[in-house]
Image (cartoon, rainbow, N blue to C red; front, top):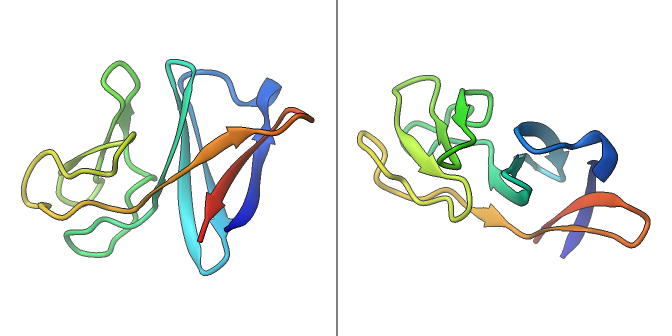
Length: 105
């Protein structure tokens, strides 16, 4: 797996999202209530950008800006129509140096 740097943990507090290039993909990395999650920035319904939409940090869901589908940030699971397929989710961790990284295969 390739590792992509997101931000230093001090610069990535709860309630924030960072959209980062990860090889051929773009990934949205979320700090939702102190837990780190990453999903592909691509709606499974129409391949449009997903992570640029609003998100609810109290429920850890992102709202597709095109058609309003909700996706679980932790798993990538589609929660509402018109999307019904999940989006890929990726591991996120904090290295010993404090850098938040996402692992994409």
